[in-house]
Amino acid sequence: MPHLLAPSLLSADFAELGKAVHLIESSEAAWHHIDVMDGVFVPNISFGLPVIKSIRKHAKKPFDVHLMIVRPDQYITAFRDAGADILTVHFEACTHLHRSIQAIKAAGMKAGVAINPHTSVELLSDVLADIDVVCMMSVNPGFGGQKFIERTYGKIDALKALRTRTGSKALIEIDGGVSMENVRQLIATGADVLVAGNSVFGAADPISAIRELSRD
Ligand code: DX5
Ligand code: ZN
Image (tube, helix red, strand yellow):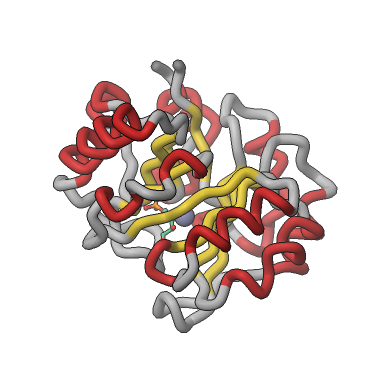
């Protein structure tokens, strides 16, 4: 399967967020990656429901909403109503992860589970078959523009093996530090979705950066 690119709006200029959304829409990117941070689960605060709701009107491509928040279960239907198509919760933030996954799917969205760099993929073995996307953090969540953690390649291999073992069809999404330097190796290792913030919106020409990062 060709891989998908999901530019992260976190690295866009928030004063011109609509422009960034239109840029993604007119590019080869597949999804909008939307990072919600609460200042509790991660040491940073980004944006939330009203912002997502207002940009939804300007977009046709799927909204891949990555919740870096505690108690995500309280907001599942609210994010669906705001326009999320894929809703990702953190393994580390969910005491009853199986229930959270079922609630996301019952609300009509695809279910994603994100794992921090310290979280072993093996911990997903009993829910992997129910998940649509595994968002594998390749930096510690909270900020754009961080350095890619090299150990991620081994975790992709481990997750591919676990996916085969469990009969799961979950997409492997890599989030953090994706760049022109590592994109080829990430695709070769088996990433299905690549999130890219700084390497898109920090580029002189974001459209051609998206083209390059989307190329298989
Ligand atoms: C980090 C976020 C990422 C971030 C990626 O906590 O989950 O989605 O926007 O940004 P880059 O690509 O700049 O590392
Ligand atoms: Zn993210």
